[in-house]
Image 1 (cartoon, helix red, strand yellow):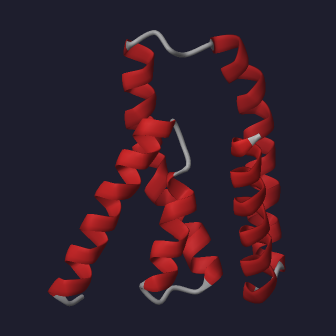
Image 2 (image 1 turned 90 degrees about the horizontal axis):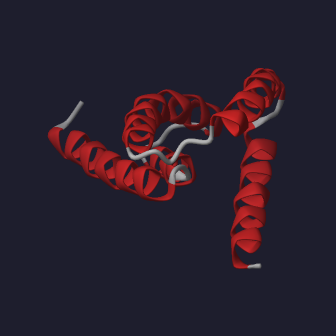
Length: 118
């Protein structure tokens, strides 16, 4: 991999990590478009983003935990649903075309943005 691309990935990673750590999530919404700009297909970008977000989320969770910000009853039940949803989502990713996936991702990002405003 050429040095320019490696530097771009590191800079994108720092920005994604800051966003995820600051907002408690959402880094994937930046990670996927960044990976698309680097030439990955939609499916590759989605799958790669999941693995990128894992260590970031663990690090952020440790910081939030040490500061007493975790509500464990919410973690348990939401976590169960999230694991089930993650499995379903991974199977759906395999079934959808890159073009359909692009539009689904765009709708989800826009819906999340609108929800944040109201």
